[in-house]
Image 1 (tube, helix red, strand yellow):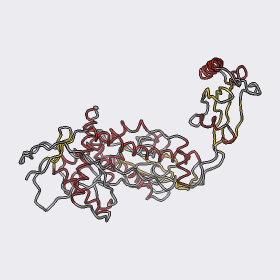
Image 2 (cartoon, helix red, strand yellow; image 1 turned 135 degrees about the vertical axis):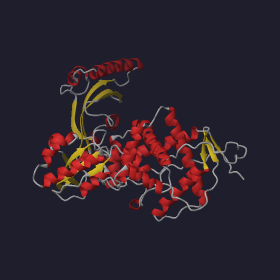
Image 3 (cartoon, helix red, strand yellow; image 1 turned 45 degrees about the vertical axis):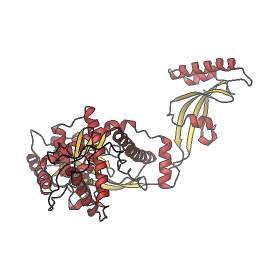
Image 4 (cartoon, rainbow, N blue to C red; image 1 turned 90 degrees about the vertical axis):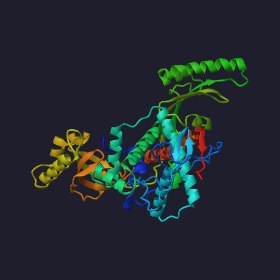
Length: 504
C-alpha cells in the first residue's frame, strides 16, 4: 500500500527529513536539537575579514547522539515528528555579517551561525533546559554547520540533486506534520517566525539532500546477525531468546591419525571436490552415502538429528552460526578430518516472553491530489462520500472500490490489522481518535485526502518471529545512526576548513 512508508524498518526517508526540518509550533515543544543545513552563503560585501589565518585544527564536530534503544521490544507508535524551529525575529540590532569559516572554498557566515544559535536556544527553552554559555553554543553550532556543509558538498559532488517536485512533496509533508492545511499556510507561518521563504525552501531542499545521502551511503552497509538479535532481546527483556536447536547433515572425509602432509592435502582435495558437487546441486544424502567416512558410512544421508546446539561440537555450531537452512558449510577441519555440513533445520525451542500490542482494523478511501484533482476538490468529494455513507445511500466498501486510488481499493479499502507505527503519523493520529465504527472527517496527508473508518480494535500477542523482526529493525536503526556519525566525521575530517576571525 503506497501510503505506508513509515514502517520501523524504513525510518530514514521522509520521516527523517520531517524530524529535521519541520516548523516548530507550541504543541511540539519537545523537539530536539538536531544538526541541519542552511543555505549556501554568498561572500559578504561588508568590511573584509583580516588576513586569512593559518588552518587551525578543527574541533571534533558534534555528532548527534545515537538513538537510545527502547526498554523492550514492544513497538511504540510513531509520534509526530520532532520539529525544528526557525530563528525568531530579533528585536535587537542585527550584528554585521561576515565570514566565520571557509569549507572547501565555500563560506559560512556569522548570520548563519547566529540563526542556528537562536534556533537551538528556542528548542532548549521549549524543553525547559538551560542553555550552555553563548560562546560554547556558538562553537557547537559552527562545528555542526561546517560538518553539514561538507556533507552537502559531498552529495553534490556525487550527483545527488533535489528537484522542485521533491521539494514540494517535502513542504507538504512538513505542513501536515504541523497540522497546517496548506503549504501556503506553512509559508505564512515561516515568514511570521522570521525566515524568508527563500531561506526556508533552501533549508528544506538541503535536508532532503542529506536524507538521500544518508540512504545512499549508510543503508547498504547495515547488517544485523541472528546472534545480535538474540543478544538484544536478552538485554532488553532479561530473557534468553530461546535455546537454539540445530539439525545438521554431515559428510566426513576422515584423515588417519599420523597422516603425512601429502596424504592430508590429498584428502582435503577430495573434501573440496565433494563440497563443490554439493553446492552445485547434487543430492547431499547421496554424496554422504558415497563419500562419508562417518561411523554409519552415511547410510542415513549424513543426518545428525535435531538437538540443542550445545549437544553439537562447538566447532560445528561456530561455523554454522550465520548459515541459513539449506546452506552448505565447509569443509571444516577437525582432528577427525574434514567435515562438510548442511543446515537442515534451525529453531528456537523456547518461546520469548509474551508481548502484547494494540492493533487497529481500519479501512480508507484515498483521493490523490495532482494536476487533475486539486486538494479542495478532493476534500469536497471525500465530504460528499461521508455524507452519503452516513445517510445510508452508499456503503464505505462500495465507494472505496469505485473511487479509492490506493491498492486497497479492490478489498473495499481494507487495511487489515495494523500495529502501532505502521502508518504515517497524520493518518495514525486521526485513526486512533476514532471510535469503532466511526468515519473520520476528510483528512489530508502527504499522499492525498483520506476518509478513514475503524472496524475494530484488539490486543495481539506478537509471535516470536515478529518480536525478532522488531528487534532486528531496532538494531538496524541503532547501527545506522552510529554508522552515519562515523561517516560524517570522516567527511568532516577530509574537508579543508579555514577559520576566520571577526573584523575589528
